[in-house]
Amino acid sequence: MCVADVFLICNYGILPAWSLLVLAPRSKWTRRVVHSMFVPVLLAAVYLTALIVEPESSKGDFGTLEGVMKLFTEAWIVLAGWVHYLVFDLFIGAWEVRDAERHDIPHLYVVPCLLFTLMLGPIGLAMYLLLRFALRRNLWLAEDGKRGGAIAQTLG
Image 1 (spheres, rainbow, N blue to C red):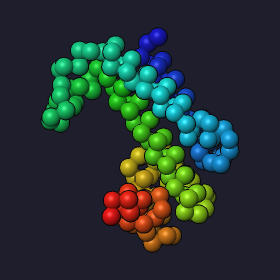
Image 2 (image 1 turned 180 degrees about the vertical axis):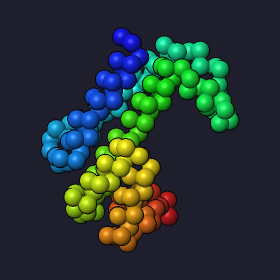
Image 3 (image 1 turned 180 degrees about the horizontal axis):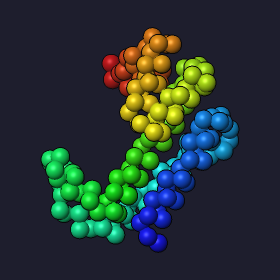
Image 4 (image 1 turned 135 degrees about the vertical axis):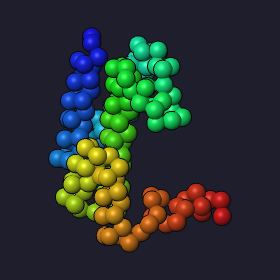
């Protein structure tokens, strides 16, 4: 299979998971597909394969912008980079949905954040965090909403 085909499969294959997050955040399918290890592990296999197929990425490095630009001149390395984004953006989107549910934030308010997280990762996350702060006046990301959460209580 060529790299362009794998790209298309990954790029469009992630959309059902995002659709579940947006349209059915509390459904059993969302929990089974999106909130499980299924999608990240599947995409991690694609990621690993892309890195193995293109081991000659030594033309570049992560130490300089020029080095990173050289890394991303190989199709399989670009695919690996894109899959990296797909996995982590979906992970953040899934966290936003779970966190909003824990903090009783209406899902309709979260949907725009999810769309931005899908398309512009960090901007969508920042939107969600600002929404969360505006509605809950809480800066802390611990599950219990307190500074440091359970870890600080355990250690303190």
